[in-house]
Length: 385
Image (cartoon, rainbow, N blue to C red; front, side, top):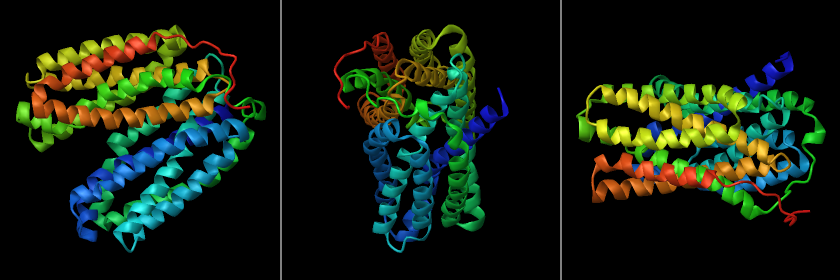
């Protein structure tokens, strides 16, 4: 890997770390934000909802636009908007404007995250796509266990508004860095036919991610409550469990890149889904077995996120002419799956209890595997010319 490759991966990693921090840090800050604007925590939670909905709707548009006109300008635009939206979040005079700021933030991240994945796929050497994507994906995952805790620490000393000010400043600096970095991206890779096949074909492919997300988040959203209810874990033990999970997620992403480049994107993405379904069954059996849970949480995240990263690489290889919009639709599918997963998890614990969650997740993983066996077939129909 040359110097330019290292710079590109470093910029992509840091940018996705910031995007992940912006996503994950809001939840632990909600109690302070609800108190500042005198609203309930449930109402304050709309900050997360409007962000996710805006992202899911806007990402495919930005993906299509980047395939048509290039990614550099849109990534830079997104980071400038990220700066503006986070400054507005920090100093919004009313809760209404606070919600507006999170809509703008969702819009900005939608023009950054999937396009970073796509541009890394554009510039990665043919036999290193999986490794390169795994590195930048690990930046987003690292925010789960490093970025969000850092934000809560900053809140403790300087207040919650300082978190968004710091993110805005970093976003502004990254706008300049990204603009300079991606000017070296070969234009021939960015100006090809934006949609070389059927939109239904693309949606069929990304449905794998939707069911993967359902399998992961139906349990993860309620993990803390599950550990408290089934194991009697204290807050420190729950925190340790989340740490094991976070480390597993990052390692899984990084390891999958090497495996993907060696054994093929399609093979690794399918094998990991098989193992994921089996690990969920083991989780269900050993969930109340004390310290064993730490091991299975680590393995769950290790295998689960190895599967996600390898499938991202598979999409990048199978859709070379539509990489931007496919990555964007895949991210939309991810958010849809997270939303459905949280709803399914809520229903399961209400009807049957926490102990049934891992088994339901295993079923979703099996469905994801079944969908992953479909082959991408070229079609003569052009939806966009």
